[in-house]
Image 1: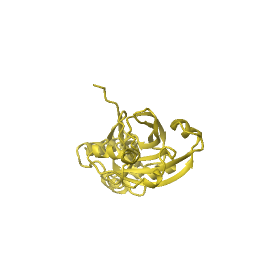
Image 2: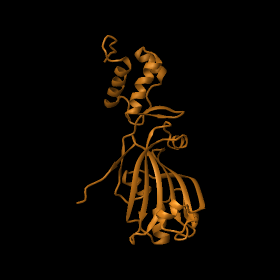
Image 3: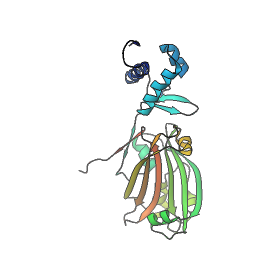
Image 4: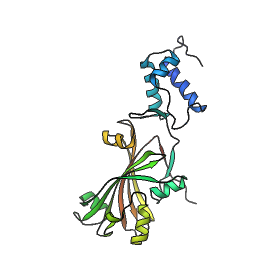
Length: 242
């Protein structure tokens, strides 16, 4: 398909469609970097402004994604996260056939705020573990998570948390606590400067913000988590009960 300057369709929209066709036809594959703006300018013999507008359209619709300091890439195939699932990230990764990889950004014992205490049904000011992590798939961060656990209920948990071990496995083996259900509250926010840095996305990119309260078999809250992920990388699904 060649550019046609005589049609009413703007050049950037024609380039947008050609790039999209190349992606759909497999010329550029998921997670593959596309040519630079300068290279695309040479390919289509148009200005950088025209190329930039075409790319911005594809980023806006989720076909492309920008990674700061690296370039523009074809968006990943979306991961499906079952909203009713009670699995943790390690279990979620194994379901995808991938090895879980997470990085602890911060692990700190703090007094429970009013909000955290209310969700965990503990005394305000009692000690909680605040755990800040990044969860990776294919060496790219998928989730940014801040979790809170009561240290009154789970003493010394902060000493047991390991970089690559499932937190849910620790809760099961060391505290005989199994997660059997959860409540989730979901909204969409724009990525702040910090979130964009953690998730390697543009500032202002749409993020799912998911607040999760996990419960044990006695319907007692086990932990409170707030995690973020790009909306163009994850489908949140609900399967009908059989």
